[in-house]
Image 1 (spheres, rainbow, N blue to C red):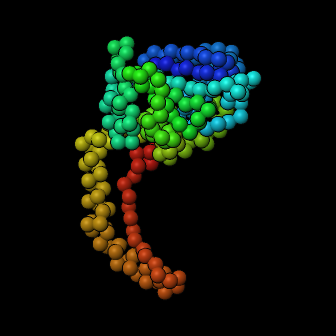
Image 2: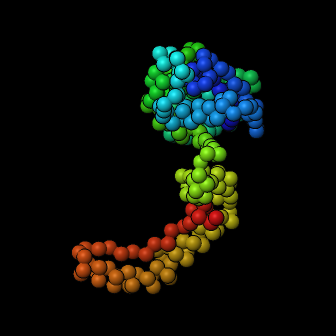
Length: 232
C-alpha cells in the first residue's frame, strides 16, 4: 500500500485546491525554501493525527473549508484492512486504474472525524467515528532537519528509529531462528526454569524484610524477553 494521490485544499500555503500525484516507490520534492515541500508532510500528519495548529488554514481563507485527502493504492489493501481495528474500511476499497484504492479525508470543519470515499455513492462518509482508527490504518515517520538529534537517538518502540527497526525486522521476528531464541529464553528465564527456582527463595526473603519495614509487599524476579529495538 502506498500514497498515490494527495489533495490539499486551503492547507497552509496551498490556497484553493491542489492535487499531487505520487508513483510507487521513492518520490522526491525539489524546490526553493518556503515553497511548500515540508507542508506536504505536515498535511499527512494532519490527516493522521487531526491536530489543529496555528497557520493551518491558508491566510485569508479562515471561513473556507480546509482539508487533506489521501488516496492509498496497492493490491495489498484488502489484506491490510482485514485487521479488526480497521475492518470498517474494507467496504470502501474500490478498483480503479488496475489496482485497489482507498480514499480518506479530514477537514477542519469536523476535525475529529475521518471521512472515507464511498465509490458507489460517489461521496465521502464517516463510518469510523472520531477517527482513531486512522492511526491503525497507516503509520508515518518524519525526520525533520530542525529536530534535535536526541529525538532520533532514542530506540524506544514508539520513537522513529524504534518503529523503523520493528518494521524492518518484522519478517525476521516470525522466523524459526527467532522463535528458537524466544523458546530458549523462556527455558532459561521463565517460571519453570532452574534460575527461577533458585531466585524464588531469595525473593521471599526480600519480601519478608520489605513487609516488616514498609507493610505488605510483593517481590518477584522477572527477566522479560528483549524487544527488537533493545538489541541496538
